[in-house]
Image (cartoon, rainbow, N blue to C red; front, side, top):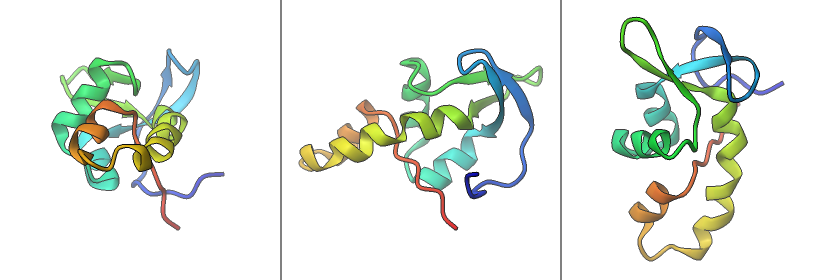
Length: 99
């Protein structure tokens, strides 16, 4: 079982993961991962993370997809330290839960 980095969030069925998972507010993802909001939207546009739009219009991110894609950036960061900002934007995320 993964440690809880985020406060309890709503659980929905993620169509891409094909399972029930928690969905997180974008602002929480930005704070936990330490990237800009525009970077998160870039990942969403490129389907590097799964997301859905709630009836209120708010978009939320599938926590399972954050864990699944976390290893790519971690593995590739040492290769591209010259332009860190661009590396983060163009590579799926690193997600290190604490605790």
